[in-house]
Amino acid sequence: MDAKPRLTDAHRRALARIREREDAAFRARVPTSLAMTARARSTMPGGVPTPWMAGFYRTPVLWLSHGSGPVFTDVDGNRYLDFNLGDMSTALGYAHPRLTETIAAQAARGVQLFLPSEPATAVCEQLRLRFTLPQWQFTLSASTANTEALRIARVATGRQGVLLFAGKYHGQLQETLWTTDDGSGDESAGADALVPEQTGLGAPPPELAVVAFNDLAAAEQVLDRRRCAAVLVEGVLTNCGTVLPEPGFLPGLREACTRTGTLLVMDETHTQFDHYGGAVAHYDLSPDLVTGGKGIAGGIPIGTYGMTDALAELVDAALADELGETVGLALGGTLFANALSLACADVVLTELMTPAEHERIGRLGTRLSDGIEAAARAHELPWRAHRFGARSGYCLQPELPRDAREAHTGIDPLFSDTRRVYLANRGVWDAISSAGPHAGFAHDEADIDLYLGLLGAFLDELCDSS
Picture 1 (cartoon, rainbow, N blue to C red):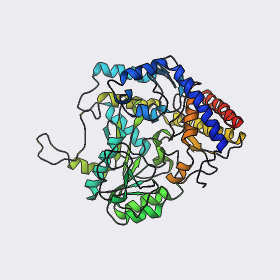
Picture 2: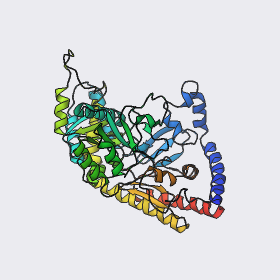
Picture 3: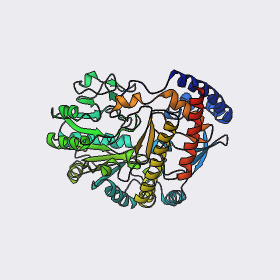
Picture 4: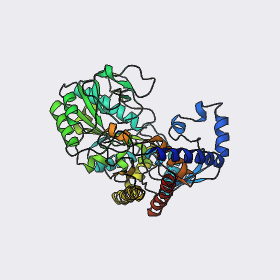
């Protein structure tokens, strides 16, 4: 694969001109948001309640008023057709009538009970249908689900190590925010050769390894040391564009884990919305644990993880009693498995995110990917579209990537940021730069066609100006 995205100097000059014009237009459309951010800086760093609300978009912060279906509205009255889907937390859309009914009904009964509520069993049954694992637990985020899954793996194996893959993202936990110095993965590098992806982490965990996605030989070399408790892997990388597994990679990883006594943990946090059953079902895998969360409760906070019966017996045996007479696994939290989260997840998984609906949005994702590639061809741009079920995106290269290093060469921040603000000024909220537009459960064919029509106009200006 070529070392640089296929943008000429003329393209980049045109993008710079478009970006300057569109940034000015964006600011002119959102005076109330600008004023609210300025006021909020006296009480919140950056004027936002969490850094991600400012850091992911590289435009002035939008303050929102409300949302309905696939559209949200800012405080200045501007409407946006959403293809970012709250990074999969709003895949259902906004203010779904069935969900709002469920929230109101559960609020009347109590949103937090600190003891089991009836929907818990139904949610577990739905998750079993998707991922085959029989036993499930709940947290408030996928990050915490990954934390707890790794703790179970350490107890089950008596080991400390974790194998990760470059380009991954598994949440804001100490164990996973590390990479090699060039971000590509290196099976020969120990934990002391890793670098933090963010600050504030302290030292890297012992026996942590990062290798390139799709490099089965490198993964086997690490696992053959028999120091890893778990392999934590996304079936499809989704935070550096989209990187699909090559044939044999995931089955080979499963075999290597079985041979070396390592647990295979599949992170379905994003991919569970791309296909029914996510990568586990699509690639017919048998992991030891599955983690997820995001939008399966329609935007109400939730995290989940499933496990085999054998691992569930281990968790059962380690349960601490009320007096603390046994030493329990470090699992749980006061608001985990709260009644509101479970009531919403029951309705979403049972009634709204059905197999038929997954098939429908998968067709929308194909329509979106096909349209992106057609638009590129029409403008003689040698680009490809990412595709995995409902997921799409831009690869500014003639070949799709096989690992994170190649994926990053197909992403250009100037192109992504300019495209985003151009579309925003015309009523479409595009995905963040590390992802791509995603079809959601509230979208229809007309929404996809609107996106593609604006993309064609953007590429017209880009190519005509260059």
